Structure formats: C-alpha cells, structure tokens
Image (cartoon, one colour):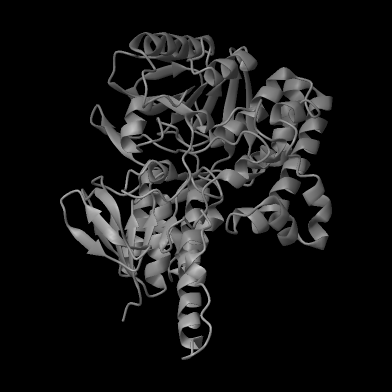
Length: 514
C-alpha cells in the first residue's frame, strides 16, 4: 500500500521529477497544476498552426534524467528520442562567425583560426578551469541540499581543500575571463554563460564559469523539444502511480498544528496530505501567495533577468542557422548596464533557436519555427517594458539579425511574450525566468533550499537550489524528494524510540531550514 500522501503543486520539471521519484518509493502522490499541460516554463505555443517551444531550449547533463528514469525502473531512451549536437552553438558578430563544437579539439582549432594561437591556448586553459570548478562542486554542492560556505568546505573534505580555496567567488566572471582571452569577442562569448542563470557577467562570480563545462560535456537535441521531455516525465510518474489534476490552481497551502497538511484549490476543494512539494517559484511563497509565508522574500533588485521572446513560424534566408545561434551586441558593458538600470538595451544580444534544424542541417525549404530571445529587466509586475521600449527592442533585434546576414519574412505569424506574460505564468517574479540572480559571492547560498520554514513543506524548481536550468530543476526535484523521505524516516524513528516517562526532544522535521 502507498505510504504517505504527498501533494505536488506544479507540474514543472522539478515537480514532475519529485512526483515520479516519490511515487516510485511508495508515496501516494497527487500533482495539482494550474495549466492544462505539464512542463511549467517548458511549454509549446501555437503560432501559425505549428507548436513552437516557448521555454528552455538547451538540454544538457543528460545523465541526470537517465538516473531519474533508471530509479523508476525505466530508460530515458525508451521515452524520448535524442541526438547529440555536433555544434554546440553558432556565434556571430555582424559578418564574423565562430562555432563551438562537441569535440573540444575542434573548438580549439576553430578558435585558433578565428582569433589566433594565443587565444586557442587561452581556451584550453579556460576549459580546464571550468572543468575543475564543475568537478569540485558537482557532488558536494549541486547534488546535495543547500549549504553554507563552512559546510561546503567540510563536504569537499581534505582532498578538496585546494579546490575550495580556489573557487573564485570574489572575482567577477568578466574579470576572470580577461585572464584567458585578449580578444574581446571571445571574452564576450564565454561571458554569455552567466545569462544561463539570468545574471550579468559583470556581477556574477567567476565560479560560474563551470557552466561552460556543463555545455561542453554535451548538448542534446530532443525530438519534439523539451516539451516532449516534460510529457515523458509525466508518463513516468503516472506509471509509478502518481495522479495528475490539471486546470486545478491552488489558492492556499493548508497548515495544521504548524505543519503542511494539504492544499485548498481555487474551486474550494481541500485535498489532505502528509507533505507538500511546491514547484512554484519561492518568491510566491515568500509573498504569501499560497496563504503562508514559508520562504524569504526576493527583493526586486535581487531578481534574475527576464526576457522578450518572439515565437515565429517564418521563412528565413542568408545566415546558415544551426539549432542554437547567438548574435552579439557591439557593446556588452553598455548592454548589461542598461539591464541593471531596469531599461531595455539599445543594442541587445539576440539568441535564436531554430527548432527545425539539427546541428548539421543546411537551409530549410519552407517556413521554420524560431524562438528569438532578448534579455529584459524583470519588471513584469510594474510598468515596463512600455510599448515604445518593445518597439525599439524589436527594431534593434531585427537590425542585429540583418547585420549578420539573416533575412526573415516578418510578415509571417509571430507571437511576443514579455515579462508581463511571465509574471502571469509565475506570480511574484516580475517575469524573472531564473529566480534569484547569481550576483555576489553569497548568491548561491541565498537560493531557497528544499526545506522551508514550515515542516512538511518542500520546494522544487529552477528557482531553488541548486540553480537555474532544466537539469538543475530536475536535481531540485530529487533533493526535495530525498529531504521529504529523510524527514519522514527520522520522524518515524523518533516516534518508535519514545518511551513513557522519557525526555522528549524536538523532531527533526520542525527545524527551520528555509
């Protein structure tokens, strides 16, 4: 018989992962989701009669999902069709182009041809440093519950003391990259990895250079996009016995005797549970959107970036698009200074995901699906961006693509998503897509952890520890499930050990660790 009733709020990647793992471990799991489909930010929207991926597009750390499926007695390959990309991304500065490859030697050779032998050596040294940082933090930080600096050092152990002392938290990524690359284009290229967690390379610790190694380990293309991965995780959870209720928004989390005891839906229906996993943004919990204040508030100044996202089904020509393409601005410092000031940059960097292209495809005959992203301030709960700002940004975006040689038929169907739309999707965020920004040495320790201030209430999702992105969201779901099961086990053990007349101690589940 199922052991322990669990409500999972939200069918994003973190919630789906928690649901599958908890159901596989014997819990009675019900997932309640406000939308009509699984995925959360991972979703597709109809544009001109075709479904265009509107959320994350880069799939890395495939092994995390292989592990999740394996723990549920299944295989990832049996549920999604994937192809490893030969080209990680194509980068353009007007007419100049540079590809990074899955084969690191090919990337080094391409950089050498693009910028000279010294820059190729700089890339080799940078890659080694990014790998060192990733290896140092993978097990003790990314795959463990949220910690503090002292505990992280203890987890890394004696053998990791050298790495712990050189994690580079006090130098910005931009400054550190200057030690590897004299060419400003390459410094700009590798600084862009800070935006993978919605942050500025001028304010992000150099520690996050590890993100470059994550991508260098492999980028995978999923048939059907990441929406297909969300559907596969939903099916996995269902096969373990989890139940799903869609179009079922939660109005409040029920707390009885100081402990999470279920949820109340907007319809008024109450669903009881022994534990609750919340896959909403922790900012919503901090603002009391669910009737409880279970996490710290995230001040607007601490939010990550939002975005203006154009979804298109258009004919293109000229520039040879691959799946992932980046068209860089001519002035990176000015671009991020504007974003920091809450304004749209006059000259933004543009990302284009050409969803109908594999990494090695040539020109497509006919309309193709494009997702076009420009970074934006997370002001979706306030006035901006104004229609005038959006119009100027759209003009700048089209100009940037045209300067690189990409011709697009803009008369074809398109749809624009703004921070206002993302605020509606994820309330209390202002449209920030990655939770709290990774600015300053302590930022990674300030992210919400798996546990909250309310016993029995846990957090999962890309805005919680260990960080932003689809693989990190899955890790957060696993951590939430592990914490829930450990807390319940320790409670049972405490109950069995209690004897009449003995001295009772505080249960482990009541410790505030938000």
